[in-house]
Image (cartoon, rainbow, N blue to C red; front, side, top):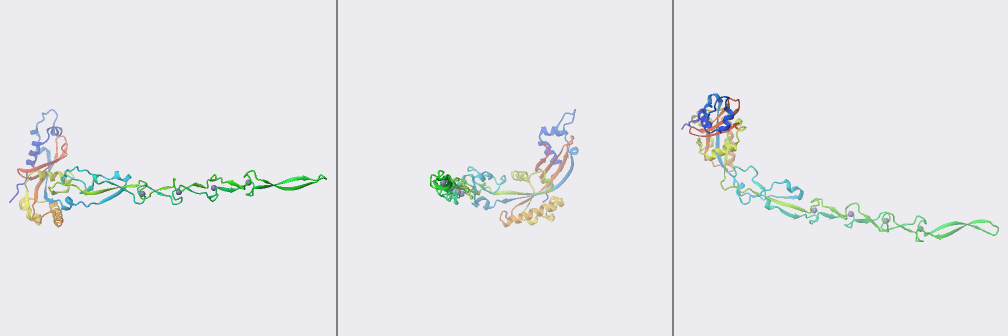
Length: 354
Ligand SMILES: [Zn+2]
Ligand SMILES: [Zn+2]
Ligand SMILES: [Zn+2]
Ligand SMILES: [Zn+2]
């Protein structure tokens, strides 16, 4: 059975019928001429047409994604928590096709606070130099709080020389011990470093505590779980393949949505190996160098997915004829129109017309 490929004129007329009036005016209105939709002509607008093919099939979302809470647990300090993206689905389901993130994400509700095991939640350790007291033995007085008196060199007495005269008025020197007044006869002085307190502040810590290196002083960690995104039970997703230079104009997601949402007709194959020139040309009536690439790419992906059981060996694979119309308006504005499907049953996408 041959497919009736769409013609560029068909696409153009269909596009023109539905194109936004305001934008159309902006692109095509000539000065001093009343603008009418019918004035826009394909001949004057379309300057090049190229054919391409679109290959489309559905794949199942792997069970692992749907059920697979791998339950990975992450443990971080409080200052790192804000770097993660948490999710709260509030009991709602997510459409797999629309979902751009990972299939397993950190759940807000799973956040737990846990004490640091190393410091038991305190965020600090006792200083090992001062055993947590914050003070150490004074090294100047070796913890006695005392020093020997410098005036009497620790003797408690000082010797003074007295001039003594006899009957002949002859002078002699006499040594006399007197109590040291500086130290009150004790020979000891208060240590100048510790002021007699016997200890000084420990330099290794603050108040006897050192910050816990493991938890950076927070004392606690936060733990959270990665859990599976709750996807809708519709466990299908579309795979679309088409030529590279169209990709820069239209998003694959748009094509997927379009083909998912309407019964655009194309060729149906039930064997991935039929995706080749010999099998398709009789029905399409054309072939392009890119078409080989598209087929090979789709085939490779299909076989990979088959191994994971994301596609069935005999499932439907659709091939759509497609046209790219490169257009330039009378005002010199460029845009593209894409038509995908058969006569009377095709989908239209545009780029640059806005
Ligand atoms: Zn700690
Ligand atoms: Zn200390
Ligand atoms: Zn001292
Ligand atoms: Zn003294």
